Length: 537
Image (cartoon, rainbow, N blue to C red; front, side, top):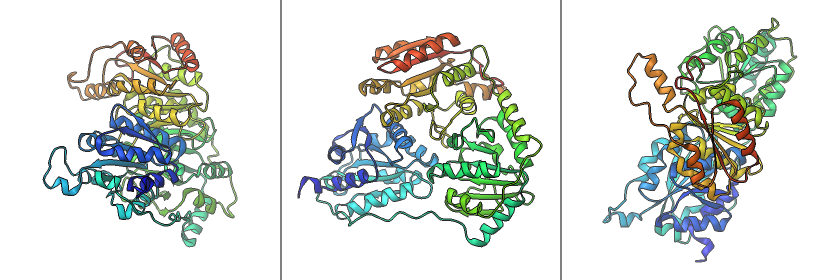
């Protein structure tokens, strides 16, 4: 057996061939061979302070380089620490390869310390789970990569027994051929063309599958040619630049935005759901149209088993190839001739104004104004995310990263750190509420160790603001949502970064300007009033 023929080496080489260059996690004795193999293959292992944060850092890299993300966790508690981020990868469509070390099966028959069934835990939240065996190491690796990335992306788990990682493995010959883009059958495609030709008020709702299909250019061609306004999910922001006159911005969680977007949707005579995945949307988007009255064409990666909505035509097909095929021999015409699109854009701008003297909207507006168009922003779950997702303009895709499927807290800081690793020359900023930041504050030490100049903005209002708002809306007493103030700037300095506390636009702008020039990371604590989100989301 040569060192490079271990089962772990075969697995690592397959991951490298798939484009993976980084893996994240915390080592234990059970994964030492695996980490050694990853490094030998050219995949840098990044030590983090918690497996959950490690998974989000891996996701941050994925959004920049497009390769599958890799999480490494040791047996028992290490693997269990990663459960949240694996569930997030499932609901947020992230191709996360989860590598866990485990005790050999024969050993587990008479040894119980830290032994539990990882596969049973991960099975409900992954697309597949495997136990690596030496004789099929290459096959299992290639299966995992294919399952994680094809169709709607998602996590795949591989349990790696201690002895198997070191055992001589068998690779497969060559690599799988990837599937070619699929377009709908001719008869249904012709119907879609006829509907497009007849539509006076067409509308696109675009989602994450557009990015998965690398179909941004096709969407932009179609929108410009047929003058179709576009609403995106939060994850699809930037599919067309948000200063485009036909872009109606993002939707998903804001009742204020839905108050205007859903009535506009009701006016459409043709709705094109282009890569739209309703897992990002609130309940107001359940059955928002009547397919018996409105023509709806759903172009998506998987059949509709969610029943959040129904469509007149359902195409399980490549979004870009389908739009290009629909456009064949269909002459463009004027749409929305009474100026409804421009009026709605103006209404939405007034609904989320950028000119408040101070508060969460002022923080968002000031940061957006200081940062360049190509900056990557990440945002944690909470009231600030709803507001920021509506206000933050994206000129290109994957420049606002968030958990909008599972909506988990504590994701923004590690997502930003992962994005910065993969895009070291681009400004990267995370936005967290104070509660979400406290969940992952220890990862500032990782940012320092990596020599990053990532910027971390924290909204400080000493409360779980969104939950407190819901509590008041239900006329309940204030319970379990408030906590003490802390010196977040001092925390940043203690970890070797720059720390700022700001209470107005001028001090925020100054801090952001300094942070952009800094050599190490910066944390900006923006102190806002309690109940500052009332009437704003």
